[in-house]
Length: 612
Ligand SMILES: Nc1ncnc2c1ncn2[C@@H]1O[C@H](COP(=O)(O)OP(=O)(O)OP(=O)(O)O)[C@@H](O)[C@H]1O
Ligand SMILES: [Mg+2]
Image (cartoon, rainbow, N blue to C red):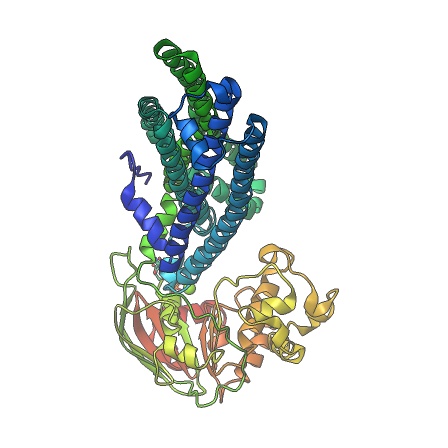
């Protein structure tokens, strides 16, 4: 799983990151680089002026030799006639002005760039989420929730904030260094070239020694963090089981071990950039000492001092730039490694479009929608399954009928329903609802189909928000909610809650009973007054009396509304117009309750067991 790109610089990945940005973003990044080049020149002017000022300070105007660089500079600006004091004040203040201007502009552009990057970060995250949710249901659940959360949050942050932002800083620092080194060449070519090679040599050596370790650490850190989050959330979700088994300690130990591993990686990841920082700091000091030694040895002390002062001024700019450069290269590398899971997601989402941004408005009219369902030679196989889960099913459900799917566990009932709802795409055959494919029908008549899944999902929000799930609750009248609650036999319960519709349901409905959660699911499905309602074991947690009330209330809907019921408790489906007995992905038998009883021994046995 942990694949590390061990090349010195992963250009293909850098290219991929840049391609994540739109063209106009890349143009903007280029402009940032141009601005930074301009700022680098401001820096250079500042350094040069400091050099000249110190040369004059040390040697005095009289000490200058006609024709040397400093004298030529003064002549050029017509300053050679001015008194020394004025020249010094003029040059010194101009240098300070350049430095201050450069810093102020840098701060301004840095703020803008960071803000811009944060916005891009948010846009890329949202776009990935949008694409993620525009896939078939099978793909949605193929990775743990924690993995998916990391991919669209931390992972994207590492790509944009870590990789792209730092690439810009790297490019700017390279420009700054080149400009300063070029400037220094005018003062002393040999020393400049020497300085350049020594520092870049050290920086690259460090990078070469450290980059692989940094990549491995970051990639491990990313996967281990996902695992850690997964364990914490599993620990909370399985609290009951763990508590009763006495298994909480084992879980906490697992979590502790993972966190300790993470701590180890984290400490090393944080320390590594310091190795280069201190090495380069020492190199700068030694480098200046070396330059000083060579200058004093080869030239007279006046010239040596002038050159050293220019290099000192330059090194206040060069050293931080080299340290930043080196650290940022490592950061880019580590960000790319930590974003590995996000790259995997991006690959998976390749070619998938984003969902449209217009939100669906609630409607209960569903004009022209005909609640008819047609399945023709339907086949379906899960990607990782050996055999087809649905093997050649054809059936026709006409308007206003009450239909039931029954059969043994694992027979394919829920899968069939997922296909009818367009949550899964058939391997072959066709499905039509009101003459369209399920996806198109849902798009054309949102809310015309209601569905209560086997496990009802409960949002961490109010009763109203839970029932409105997917619609803006502010646009839904309370009346409509109460009607749905009434149908689901839940209105009395909600009336007794503090705040009623605004009562807050805790995480995944922990403060509701199993049956209340199911009825909330039913109310949610009935909110839009759908014309087709599909119940997948939606009443299994209810007592017989409540189940009876709920199913009677639902069956009152038939006539205008087509009801498809999956049930193990056969009492509910007794009055169905047609019951399909599904086993191993096929319709084994079909008929009314009594017909099925006479032709299917298993069905008959089950009915007998239940005393029907
Ligand atoms: N995401 C999946 N990937 C692979 N196989 C799956 C997946 N979901 C279900 N299956 C398999 O498909 C088969 C049919 O499952 P399905 O959930 O449709 O059965 P069911 O008839 O609804 O059973 P139950 O009555 O227990 O709810 C089972 O063997 C199941 O293991
Ligand atoms: Mg099922």
